[in-house]
Structure formats: C-alpha cells, structure tokens
Image 1 (cartoon, rainbow, N blue to C red):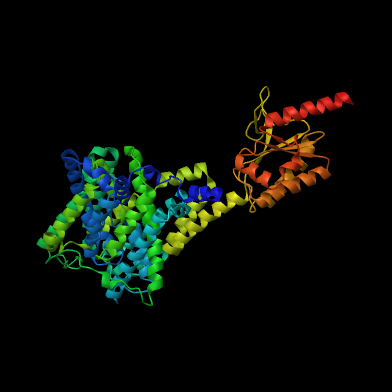
Image 2 (cartoon, rainbow, N blue to C red):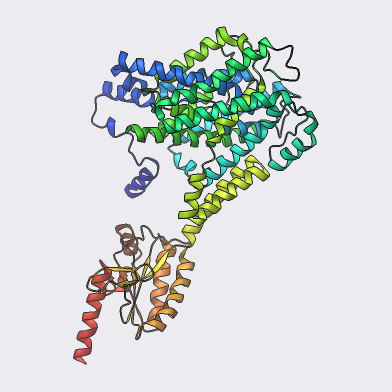
Amino acid sequence: MEKLKQRVGEIFFPDDPLHKFKNQTLPKKLLLGLQFLVPVFEWGPQYNLKLLRSDVVSGLTIASLAIPQGISYAKLAKLPPIIGLYSSFVPPMIYALLGSSRHLAVGPVSIASLVMGSMLTQEVSATEDPTLYLKLAFTATFFAGLFQASLGLLRLGFVIDFLSKATLVGFTAGAAVVVSLQQLKGLLGIVTFTTKMEIVPVISSVFHSRDEVSHQNQKPIIQNLLLFLIGLLMSMKNPKLFWVSAAAPLTSVIAATLASFMFSSKLHGVKIIGHLPKGLNPPSMDMLLFSSSHLAVAIKTGIVTGILSLTEGIAVGTTFASLANYPVDGNKEMMAIGAMNMVGSCTSCYVTTGSFSRSAVNYNAGAKTAVSNTVMAAAVLVTLLFLMPLFHYTPEVILAAIIITAVIGLVDYRAAGRLWKVDKLDFAACLCSFVGVVFVSVPVGLSVAVGVSMFKVLLHVTRPNAVVLGNLPGTQIYQSVQRYGEAERVASFLIVAVESPIYFANSTYLKEREEEELIEANKETAGLKYVVVDMTAVSAIDTSGIELLCEVRKTLEGRSLQLVLANPGGTVMEKLHLSKSLQLFGSNGLFISVGEAVAHISSLSKAHREVI
C-alpha cells in the first residue's frame, strides 16, 4: 500500500504541492492555503509604486491592441462585436487574482474563436437564431471553464500533453489559413458567401461571387495591411519598438472610423459595425442551457475550445516565465483560466485565454505583475461606458485586416522546417494536422492532431528501439555498432540494448527482434554462446515483460545459449525478484554492467578451457 501510495503521488502530485504545509502552525497553514489558491495574496504585500508605474504603461499598451482584437475575434466566433469587449473586461480581472504568470495578457484569441464559430454553426445558425446561438456560446464557455478547472484541481494537466508541438504547429498554421480565408467576405465586400470554412468551398464561393466584389474596399485593405505588416516587421527587428505594432490596429480603427463618418455619403456598399450598446457586462447566468436538446454540442464545443485555449495559455505563460526566470504552476494556471471562463460565461463573455501577441507586447512593455491585466480591463471599462458610440462607423473591412495580420504569426514555417530536418515522423504529424484543418474541417483537423499524437506514442511503445552493441577498442565501453563504426562485436557474444520499458504492448515485437538479431549474429559472430541484454534504459517492466524474459531464456537454453541481464534498474530488479525469475538466471546471469558481464564470462570460459 505504501508503494501504491507513492506511485499515485508520483503520477498526480510530482511537485508535492503540500510540502509547504508540513510542520506549520494552523494560522500559517491557512495563510499558505490562501496564497496557494489566490496568488495575489503572495506577491500583493510586496507591491509598490515602481511596479505599478510599469504595469500601468504595459496595461494601457495592451489595451490598445485588445480593444480592436476583441471586436474582431467576436466576429470570427459569429458573436456580436460587443461580446468581444465584454470578454476583455471580466476575465482579465479574474486572472489577475488567480493567475501565476506575470506577463500573460488575457482575452479572446483567434483559434478558440474560430473553433467555437465553426462547431456551433453546424448546429445553429448565428444569423437565423442569434439568441439561441449566443446561449450556446455562453454554455460552451461554462463547460470549457469547468473542464479546465477540473484538470487543474485533479492534477490532470498531462492530458493536454497529447497535443504535441509538431501537431500544434500544423494545426495553428491550418487554422491561420482558414481564418484568413474567412476574412475574404469582409475584405472583398461579398454578400453571398459560404458558411463552410474549408479552403475548397471558400475559394469556390469567392469565384462564383466575383461580381459582388466591392472595389471601394481594396484601397483601405492595402493601406491597412501595409500599416500592420510594417509595424509587425519593425517590432520583430527591434523589440523596443513593440508599441508600433501594438498601436497599429487601434490607430487604423480610429482613422478608418473617422474616414467612414466623414465620407459616409460617398462610401456606398462599405459595411460598418453599427450600434454597440454602452454599459457593463449584463449577467448571463439565466442564458446557460443545461436542459436543452443542444446541450451535447455545447459540451463538445466547450471541451474542444477548452483544450485548445488551455494549451495556448499555458504555452504562452511558460514561454515568458522562462524568459523572465520565474516559475509558473501549470495546475494553478488551469484552475485560473477555468475559473475566469466559468465566471465569464455568467457575465456575457465567451472563451478566453492568454494571447501570444498581446502577451509579447505586455512583456516588451515592461509588465511586472498581473496588475497589467487589471489596467487593461480598466481601459476596456472606460471604453464600454463612454466610447461605444465612436465605433458605430468602424468599417468591417478593418476588422478583417486586423484578424489577418494577427494570425500571420501563427504560420511558423521555421518550426515546420526544423521538424522536417530533425524528425520526419513529426513533420508528417504536422502536415496531417494542417491538411485536416484546411481541407476537411477544424474539428476534424483537431481530431487528426490528437490521433497522430496518440499514434506516435503507441508507435514508440509498441516498436521500441533495440540496438546491437559492440566494444570500443581499448575501453570497457559498449556502443551501437551502427552509430559507431569503430565498435567491434565481441566473439561468442550477442549484446543487445533495449531502449524502452518492456510492456505487454511491445513484448511480442522484442521477441521477434531477438530472433532476427540471433540469425544475423550467427552469420557475423563465430561460436555464439552468450546473449547479453543491456537493460540500462529499461525503466519499467510488467508481467508480460517478465514472461518474455523467461521465454527467451528457455528458448536460448534449447539452443545451448545463455541469456545474461546487465544493469537492470531498481524497479525492474524488484519485480524480477517478486516473480522469483531472478533465481532462473543464477549467479552468472546477472551483472551491473555489460563490461563486467563480458569480462567475467570471458574469464570463466577461458578458465574452463584451460582446465579441459
């Protein structure tokens, strides 16, 4: 029971989160518990005016980016633009209390917005029944938060690890392409446009609706895209110029809104946002659908968007934490992101997480704590209370341009090139995810990404690496004869290293490999008598693995060959001992290294020949 308890603790509590509470008084334990659940109580007492100054500057800077992006991403999710601003107000304040990252800037993001829009529109039309669609969006947000918080509370963060880096590169690049294609409707002023998101229907829709293209949109499109790209390139080349790319979207929105207002009589056919209500987030708890026939799609959408937003948020948070050299607790982050989404679903917000673009601006602007999120929320609050009428004449084409420039950075072609160079299987996983998103659908692309990641895990488990070792002349070191040309096979010995745990899933494959290596060794090694298995890399073994060793030993005995085990680990030794399999190998069948095994057996064989 002690071993079982220890093993369960290693799986779910590898960082031992309760070690701070040991040998503490009750008041101290209560304080530590409060700091653990609400991190602001940990760093809040040390907060000062100097930190506030830095956080105010960075908070106002990211607000200039969050306001236009919030409106744009809400449109991407097929939601009213005001929902994007609501989602940039409440969730950042919740994260400032519960989050452990100093630089994570919270708000709507493109990937989660796209996935929510694509999954919900398969069930309900956002134009035909906008009220039901809005209710489903809030319900999906609630379940996304519930799922995220549960993962953190139950210490199940390893679940999101099944989305490997390779598959995420392909998925995000595919999503960026799909997002950009969806903006063609707004960019070109097309009225009749497909509701599908795959590349073929979108291109076909643009081709068939080419007569509807508004030429009045082309000039502002080119101007704003150039402005955004110039700002992006300047900030990439010189991080000190971060404010250029951060201010570009809001500057273009202001300029385009003024132009639209002043020349509205001449700009026929240019769509504008229209009326946006002033005021704080209205409560939406009564809009959550827990007994609807559409509940299944809301739960499904919530889980999918929850996984994606959680993966992005934690990845962004840990990235900037490593740059600033401070720790981030992944499980705390899950609970914080989950809590802000559950609260957000009750205050007219949809799925939010940490945005890479806004977090990068936050980091470069000199943010010191999560108070920068509170400052950003305050700026959004002022906008909601007093500035809403100013966005009435904002052209939708500007929002489309903002989205396109925001998702350009998601296409990480350098990472894809590294995958091709380092690991072709990872590149194949990346390509499958990309193709699935672009040519089939976003949910299918995500399923492909998870499926390919799972397949890779199963492939490594069921097809472990097993290599033949040879001796490096003049040393007691044994290395792969394929990797080291100077490594020489030892006469009368076949030395094999198994580089993985031995489980039921790979035992049959290892037995087949052993047969192949025996056939090959008989050709290359004269008078084969001993088979040495280097178990240094075998971190674990189950009953099927033990049965495999016993079967191989028995088979080799029938061929007048001896099986020898070299350097089995502590866990492996314990299980071999409990199964009473160690007795079968005897004193000359178990050694602490390959070198010792070869030296000892060779000396015994030499002594035996001399006696004869």
